[in-house]
Image (cartoon, rainbow, N blue to C red):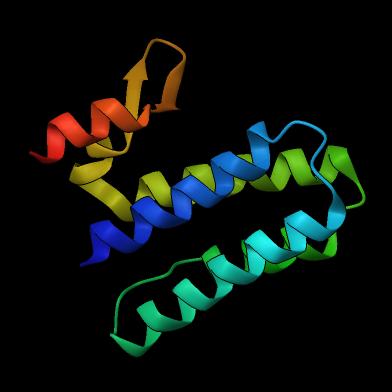
Length: 111
């Protein structure tokens, strides 16, 4: 259950990060989705760490691209921390640290 939610949150963060010509309105919409997922996690008693604050910060700072980039990085780091030993299911790791896995890799791993 926790993996499912964290995977969805990682997808949202990546979509914000890699979105071409992403608007402030789309960042607000995507972070709203993330905040709703985080609220569901909290209702289930799952640890959300600093994700709620990070997603709220991304929403508030969407007009400041430098700050948004920093918050995206913080979100990824927090997701890896919360995933713990399951982080490899969502993120890969190399000498440069963790990186987001492509959907096709994650589907193969989940199978």
